[in-house]
Amino acid sequence: MGDDGGVAADKKRGTQTVRDMVLSLAVILLAAGVIYQFVPHDEDQGDGARRVDYRVEVNTARRAAPYPVAAPEGLPRDWRPTSVHYEGGGPDGAAWHLGFLTPGEEYAAVEQSDARPGPYISDVTFGAERTGRTQRIDGAEWVRYEGRKYDALVREEPGFTTVVTGTASFAQLAELAAALESGTGTTSPPASPTAAPATA
Image (cartoon, rainbow, N blue to C red; front, side, top):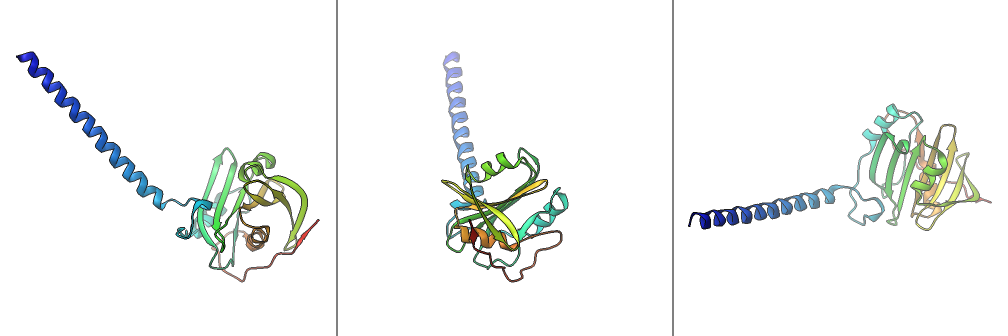
């Protein structure tokens, strides 16, 4: 009889352990769902995309980065910043990212790094390829890249590369590129400059 009691107790403990595991898993999944709701997902976001304030991040990145970090000034209000981060020592070197949803709900981002240009450009544009065409924007020459997922405008400078990329049209990518300012201090919203047309 004592052995039967021990078996019953073991079964009870086993049932409790399984129940506790199921409850713990449910709590973890619930927490993950809540976190997911508050994390920006760039181009996958729709009308309900959360607007982020990137002023603190851009000023922090400008103090830390080994190159002049670019961020737009004067973009219209209906350009919604949805994601921002700076990583100082990752696989892409010192990498700066600032993502937006355009007025037409397309995705556009500013990507910068001091990593090797070729692999970096391929990485942030999902394999877009150089077209050989250039576009002059506010006196600077940008190279056009086209891809199956993202298009891009790319500017290589000594020591770092700036990429404006996404699902947005080249006109919108040029608008974002034209608004970019580099330097230190807080961002302020002057009028957005206009971009020059593409050249062959």
